[in-house]
Image 1 (tube, protein in one colour):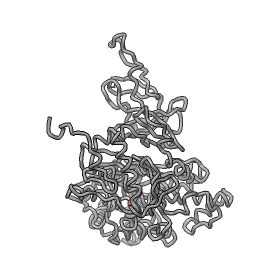
Image 2 (cartoon, rainbow over the protein chains, first blue to last red):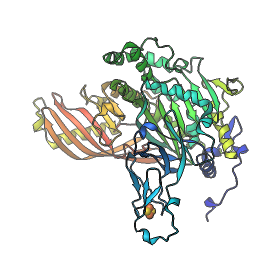
Image 3 (cartoon, each protein chain N blue to C red):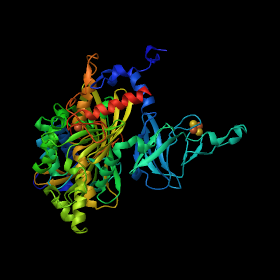
Image 4 (cartoon, each protein chain N blue to C red):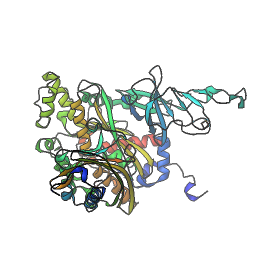
Length: 424
Length: 163
Ligand code: FES
Ligand SMILES: [Fe+2]
């Protein structure tokens, strides 16, 4: 046994999470990472997919819970299942197609066949097993699955609280987020995937970090015209805020006028959507045109869902911890199922503009996240400060803190939950 | 080149043009690169392997003339932390095949390997690249360019230069 593998003691969370700051080891220590995989990703409700990714019977999609590969499948009755992608015989993955339709999963190694609900159905040459071998005990390992507003969550913990209790105060915000279907069901249109050499919590922090926006995204802002630029002026305006929603969730409201897309239905159509509106008028009445155009622009807030998801302005941002200093990010573009082609095209063009490996925003985010990981290799005795806004917060209706838009209130909320879960 | 006719353009001339383009991109001489384009086409980096209807799918990049110009301005303005400085790149373009010549349009494809270097680490990208080249009074120009990264639908890394 090398020193690296030597079992470390329990993680001392008081030394790591000190309320207004966290220890550098939080980004650097593989032992903490291993404990997180066990206690956080192994127990909490994790976002695994959206129902539009597995729309019909027999549809499946590969995903992850922490480091563990899983399959989301919809069986013949239309019921959703989340299964560990590992054969119960000698551990081969049973599916390597990212997304598709099937009637069963067959392991390529010795041919064990599993139903869409994970049950073991067929074993080649069964005569090699004695009579007391019971197939019922060797289905694919199942996770508990629940959905909310089309989002699919799973947990390894069969005793976990119901998903809706876990989401708690985040639920009304999820409902508001889904209004950007503009009257159509929300559909995943595609996704950007990229990995960054950083700890997963660097990403967790960033979704409620308005502070970096005018600095890191200056080059994106410079590519906007005056009107669109106005939308992103939240650091200068004083009406944005970050609210702790409990359970590690938080919401950062950047454009309060775009919290509820059904508010203010008579607002004039912004100039940059004039051409789209004109196209839509051929098929829709004026009220619908306005509703769709408003939906295309997206919501005015980022909702952070502990531990791995965010409903971010107009897309899903999903993180996957790979190792202590490597994290994969998915930016899932959303559109309107059965909605106007022109509207979905514009949604995708707006998404491409900022997101993904070559967007005008994401590469700059990736750069600073990597810089955090590179920097935290130095002076490990120093802490990472998440105290911005402390002492300036108000108490919200939920009895939880609300800070101004650039306060680190959301990060403190996530770290509070981190500690609570790690202590269990 | 005034009387250039597409059917008479040789593989050697096409190759020289693609290598000159590759040289501009490695040198990050983006203004000269923009000048290689006609006004109507797209610079596309699709995500889905077999995508052809780029307007109706999500891409990594789907740039018309205005977006290409904005992209270059972003690189040049010096405010993008990922491109100030960007990764250095060295690329080769090879296995060049002229697929089709129709009117003034020459459809070409090639293999491209790019190695980038930043922060003391190197990353490699391989791609099948397709061009629609047009024969004009000023010689060959690019109307469309589609860069099909080998791992386009997998997990990439952020990219601070052009393919
Ligand atoms: S490992 Fe799957 S059948 Fe043997
Ligand atoms: Fe950002």
